[in-house]
Image (cartoon, rainbow, N blue to C red):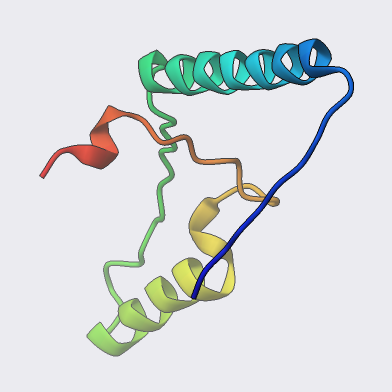
Length: 87
């Protein structure tokens, strides 16, 4: 496969200015998301202790999979912070 692309522009200065502004904006947003504290969400679920194991599992299943596990709707955006890259 060969991809041969050519284009001419009359206002090259405006083209490169917009490209530069876009790249600087993207780099700034990436840096801001990298140094921002990670998004944390804590929620609790109270299980009945006098229930059978199957009832507790059913309550957990309903809470996590049916009710969304306490996540707000819509789900907040997840930033790509430095924790994503640690192994």
